Length: 417
Image 1 (cartoon, rainbow, N blue to C red):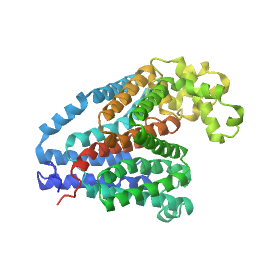
Image 2: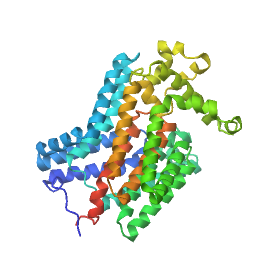
Image 3: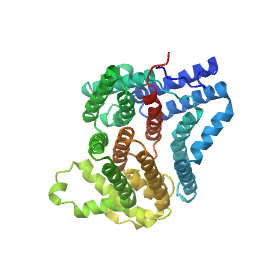
Image 4: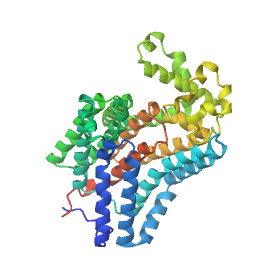
């Protein structure tokens, strides 16, 4: 049975060509992130423009405006919209408002691009698209692995850039992991033998890459995803409730996590930590103390990047003050507190809980992988990079689009004729 093509795609030759270009850009994103590890927002934005052209050429502006309003007026859309406005407003009390506005733009570009793609109605990934995306994820993962074992022979040969330290490619490794999950979900759920074999190959190759990379956050995320998926298979309601409770507790207690670990972790266990992990606890202590000096409003969007230049930094205890130039707390929940205060952290927590509540209404078979994905991604941002980086928001936006398309794919998974 063939899946009906989108009316946007079939509207005119221009609409079809633009939609094909958009799908091609999204399929190429894993390879783009291997070549240039901050390129995801650019590819997502270009794809959004292509899909908008397809929508206008195929059916005009009115249907797209209706879909956009439906997205923005949903409870989840409203919460995220309010957070974006609060983040923008918070730059007014930052000690470096211009830098905050620049980061707000970097944060919003992939958000708006993802919203435009969803509202266009032109993003309708067939099984063929999912197969192509699976292949590009595999190719990107293999290229990254080859870079690691040959000390960046390909990059040296192609002269792609001068940065050839393995940690620099953590973003690309995380991209492969994040996009692999919805690809596996879509191909496996009701696919045939070939599609399931391809899904299994994606999982195997990406797992090898993750454990070969320097990204401890990617390893943690993969382990959490697998553990959560197994738990959801055994006790789905209990596992979902535990995921929601862990998420809420971490968001609420983020400023206290560093001091709690420092106080409660046995000295014998701490002595076995890698130096980078031990320093991370110290960083959480430092930024946690800073967050509690301005707990309600925070310091302003992206103020954590230069918090050592804020006059309030002088009130932070001397041993911890030395870690403020790190640039960010290496924890998204803690950075939400530092930059946007209790208000911003509460808005993000409410959005996350609402998303889990929506997933709870799906059947266990449909909800298990998205919930495990949520748990793994949250585990990554709790211990990893800056919260507002555009490349991370972009790959999450694409993964969300793929998961939203999964119910369509599982009803009619045949290729278009």
